[in-house]
Picture 1: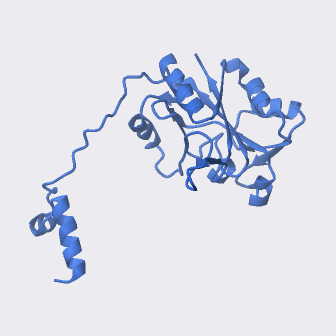
Picture 2: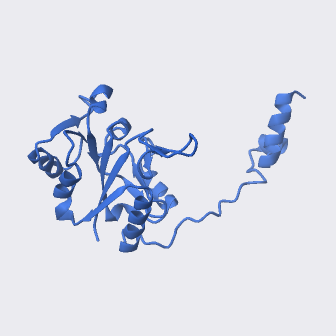
Picture 3: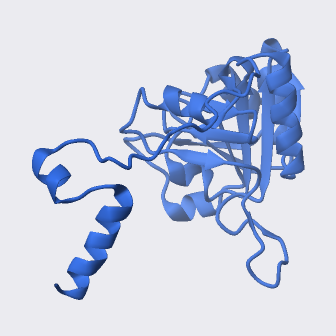
Length: 222
């Protein structure tokens, strides 16, 4: 038996797969139990879920502004104050875009027919998007490149990301979010838990390494 065969045999043994199960196609005897928590008890879209999401995001040093549905456009424009240019994805509500134009900011549209080049994004101050789902338990926002969210690069290059999250998009746990995301398994996912940051070097926190250092969440609802 070669070293490779020994390693594979050890892996199969750990997984509960022997020669008999491999030949018959039966389920492995040592199947890993999936008894992890699926729900947290926090009702999706509830005030409690939104409060917990806000708490987690603030702990990650994100900025959270809560507003009513009729205040979204004005709130988005306010959170983009000071930005000279803003990138917007296809499918973003026109009322939000109009509110941005009213402030005099340069709006750069990223559409499949004319995607913004990397250099253009690098010279853009901010980006505004919606999201697919948000997880209260972990303070995580997920984008799946659907309408109003755009390409992954769109939210990774500009230094400020303003993301609009509706209360009905807030779920309690990660498994609940994954079940929703299964509707479009072909879409690329971006999981965001606060501004981009690392502390690899001497445990010194550095923000903006892998994405925007300024994350601003507009939480719409109760």
